[in-house]
Length: 246
Figure 1 (cartoon, one colour):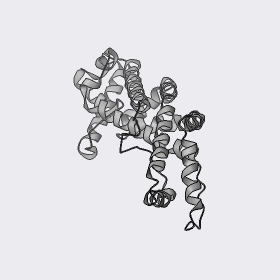
Figure 2 (spheres, rainbow, N blue to C red; figure 1 turned 180 degrees about the horizontal axis):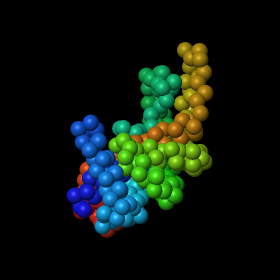
Figure 3 (cartoon, rainbow, N blue to C red; figure 1 turned 45 degrees about the vertical axis):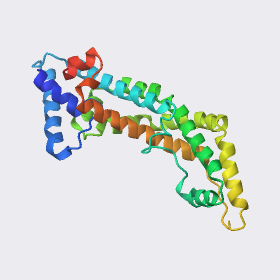
């Protein structure tokens, strides 16, 4: 049975550094479906409920890991892949101010935006866990038989609206707490007063940081999905080891 269950992890538990979609993914998903079928017909030592419990546990581990990493100090700021930078429409502003010797002002604004994203990320785990708790057999089967980002896509579809609602006020408060709003205001007021500025900038800072924070969150969730798919050491508890193999 372990020969059948181990591929389930590689195909379904929330996570894979495997970039070889075409060479291995299809076969793994077929094996996962076979294991489900055997469980349903009584030909497996594990029931569908046990397999689903293992998948849910894998998803929960990944969600908690993602939340923990991003909500730590420098979770966003020190990660070049997801660091919140000035929006595209503000790049000219940034360059102008840096050229005018006001780089420190811009740096403070960028640091404050990232601190707000880190603060908001603390609220993601409970929302993810609730979505995972409600996952049924068909949801789990779709993840097992889906693409190598099926679990991430499932969570995004189920939680994006709730996460946006949860993140927005936290980011609003964090932007105030970290003086991001002040730094942002200073940046754009300074830029708008320059004699060379003909088009004034008015950007929704809170909305922008919320969007970037959520984008970074799901990026990290995908990395956790890749990790658990590939690395047996990431199966951190008895449920995962029983269902997916040690």
